[in-house]
Length: 472
Image (tube, rainbow, N blue to C red; front, side, top):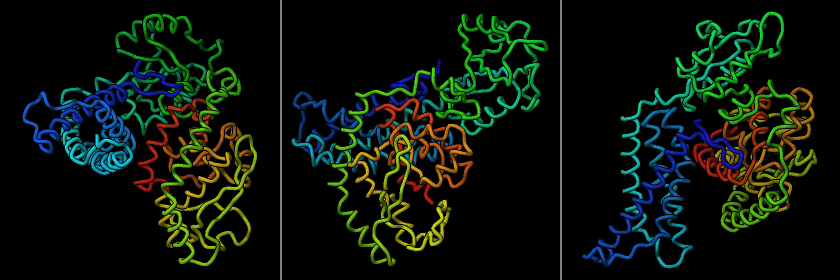
C-alpha cells in the first residue's frame, strides 16, 4: 500500500516519508543554528556552556515544513524538474519562512527566535534539504518505486479513468501495466494497452509484479458472453494484491469523485458524508478566531484598497452579490469592486472571463493579490461562510448548473468557503464543463472534509495567491 488515510484524507506515502525526513533535517538545521548563533553572538568557546532550547527547534521545523507545502515543492520536484524545485524551495525558505519566523519573534517573548538564529537556520536548512533531495534522486530509481496497476475493463469507463490519470501519473507514482477487456463491452482504450485475459490471475499478477487491480468494466454482471472473475480476484486479494473499483481508485489517487461513475447508493453507504457536531463547533470557533486575527492584521491593507478603488473609477467601493450557501440558502457576499459599475448593465449574470475587459486597473491588481476577497472576512464572522469550503456560486448559475450536472446540489451540504479544494486542483472555471470538473473536487471535500484537510488547503493556497493562479 502506497498511501495512508489521515482524518479521511488520502496522503501518498512517498510524500509523507519525504516530509518527515525533511522535518527531521529542519530540526537538525535549527539545532546547528543555535550553536552557530551561540558561538558568534554570545562568544561561547565551550560547547558545554551552550544552552539547548527545544521550542525554537520545533517552531523552525514546523514553519519551514508548512512553507514547503505552501509552495508545492514536492509535486514541482516531480512535475517541473530540479530548477523549479530549487526556486520554490528558495522562495519558501528565504521569503515565506524568514518572514514568518521574524513575525513570531515579535510575538514570542525571550528572543529565542532571533534574527541570527533565523539567518543561520535558513542557510543550513537549505543546504541540508538540497543535499537530501539530490541524494534521493541520484540513488533511488523512481521508476522502480511506481506501483504497477492493471485495469480490468477496456471500455468507456476505463478510457475515462486513463484520461484522468494521464496528467498526474508521474506525480502519483502509478504505472498502468495494461487493460484486460471484458467480453461484454466494446474496446475504447489504446490497443497498445490491451492484454489477453489471464488463464491464471494469481500467477499473472505475481509474474508481472502487479500491485493492484482496478475493476472498471462497463458491465460487471455474470452472464452469457463473459463472466466477472470474482474467485480469481479473491485469490489475488488473499495473496496481497487488492482490487478496487474505478470510483474509489479515482477518489484516492486524484482527490476527486468522478461523477460519471457516481451512484446515489455509493454516497449513501460510503464512509464519508458524515456530520459531526464536535467538528462543526470546532470549525466555527476556528473561523471566528482566525477571521478576527486577519481583521486586526489586514485592516490597513483594506483601507488602502478601499481608497484605491474609490480613486480609480466611479462607483461604490464594495460590491455585493447573492450566493448560494449551506443547504441551498442564499446569502449576500461582499467584495471590493474590481469591475466597472456597468459590468452587468443588462442585468444578466455573466461568467468572468480571462483578461475580462470589465475589470478596472486597480481591479486587476486586487484580483491577482486576492485583496478583493478581504471583505468576505465579514461573511466568515457572521457564519454564512467558512475559511475552507466550496466556493459559493450565484443563484442564477446554480439553477442552470443543477439541471445540467448530476449531483450538483451535493456541494451545498457543507458551508462555502474563502478557499477550497477545487481551487487548488483545478483552474478558474467559466463554463458548464469547468463547473462539472470542479464539482468532482468539491464532492471529494464534502465527503472527506476534516480539520487536517482544511489546514492543508489553507497552507497550499499560499502558492495560489503568490503565483496568481486561477485569476480571471
